[in-house]
Image 1 (cartoon, rainbow, N blue to C red):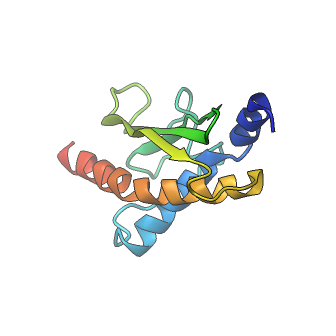
Image 2 (cartoon, rainbow, N blue to C red; image 1 turned 30 degrees about the vertical axis):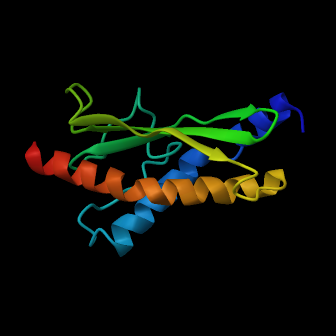
Length: 145
């Protein structure tokens, strides 16, 4: 696959949904349900620019994954970063705004991704590794504010 085809394929994987799923699983299985997750019906966990918390929610967490792909002579790479933003009210400053996973690069061939269908599982493994730090970072921010 040509570099531009690889990049488009990577962007079509929907890594935001993969990250939200990993975060929800962590909250249920490891986080002792200390944060209730409410679906707002928008992409990911919300649009960072326009979302507001539901009336019965304490805060709104938005997660945006910024994926990139490069194709070089020896390996194809994913470059991944999650931008998390937690707000209590739309007109207030964020309680937390932080990037997770910045600079993470996964060598596709080193991870045995022999074809494009194997890229999504690599995202899932990466998202799972970021779910814990993200969850506890959000919880700590909520407790401090």
